[in-house]
Length: 71
Image 1: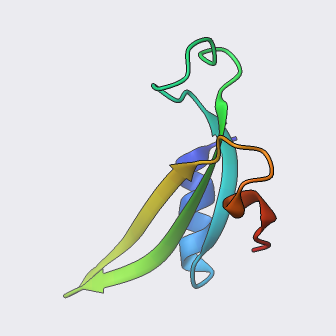
Image 2: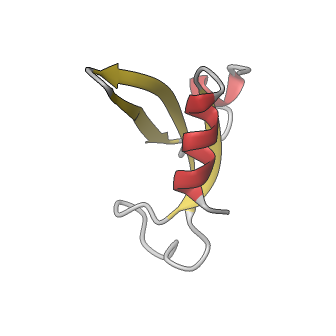
């Protein structure tokens, strides 16, 4: 998965979530497999520049509040 491309596609669609695996620096041993991460990207225009604004969070606890929420 090309994460930046997926985030750009989500933003150009008006904004959206992308879920993927990424190395979490606070988790030992996930360098090969990654930890679950959810990001949101939205379009942003400043002057004539079309940009993508995004933010993400690691979802570390199965059954946690983020896992129960449906996007």
